[in-house]
Structures are given as structure tokens and as C-alpha cells.
Image (cartoon, rainbow, N blue to C red; front, side, top):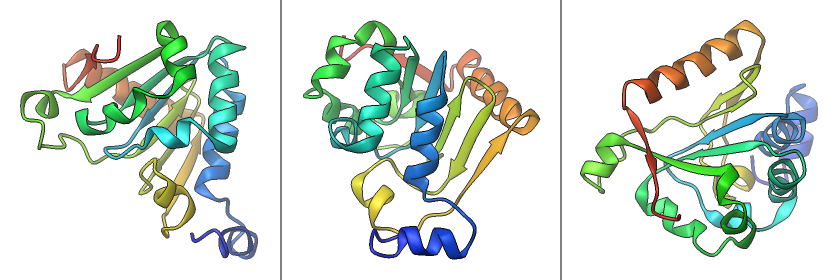
Length: 169
């Protein structure tokens, strides 16, 4: 939702902003965090409340951060100093088809998973526009449904749909 309307609309709809839901997921994560979108701008990992929560989770709580995106979006992380400094706890994944043919997204899914017990599935890319300007919808899942999303993520990894990308190592 555009920033000027987001908080009011969230209140009136008894809902949350995507940025608020994602930030809370990150702030409460203890072990493992997956953040996936075909379009991610490294700048949201370099400033603002989401960046602060992510950096604290990785550096202070030793959370493993798994970022799933395309090769094109990966290049935006090359200048994010705290991610480069914490590469042991930050991993990047790409869809196999995006590795094979860079212009193919391979995945249009946008999801986040925290510790296998909380998951977000929605329409927002992890960009400034996606989190601050566009109308986006998503659902926040807890418990068994979140675990099913987490299990699906693991299944995709096991079957080679998403592959580890070592470009920024």
C-alpha cells in the first residue's frame, strides 16, 4: 500500500503492512530465515527497519539467512557491507532455470519462512516499491500451514529446483 495510506488501511482492515509482517518475522526468528522473491533490491537490506532487523538477526542471534532470487537481483547485494561481512550466515539461491538461462525467472514466488513455524506468502517483491508504494496482498501463516510451506521449500532444494549460488563468496 502506498506509504501515505498503508498504516490507516491496515488499521481499518484489521490487517498489517507487508513490511510490518516481514520485520516481525525477522525480529522473532531464532535459527533460519528464508526470503524469496524474483525481484529484490539490495538497498532494502542496506537501510531501514527491515535491514536493522535482518542485520541484528544474522550478527547477534546467528540466524542463517537464505535469500532466494535471480542472478540479476544478486548483483545488488555486492555493495551491502554487513552481508559481505557475514557471508558464513548468508546464502543465496537461484532457480535452476535462472542459472541455465539468466533471462528466465524460474520462479515468480514471493515467500518468507522463519524457523519453519511462521511463513508469509504474498505478492510483494522485496523492493522499495513492493514494500512501500504498491498495493500488495499476502497471508501470514503459523503452525502446521507454515510448516507445510517450510517442507515445500526443503523439497524444492532437495530436488534441485533452487540451487546455491556462490557468486558473492
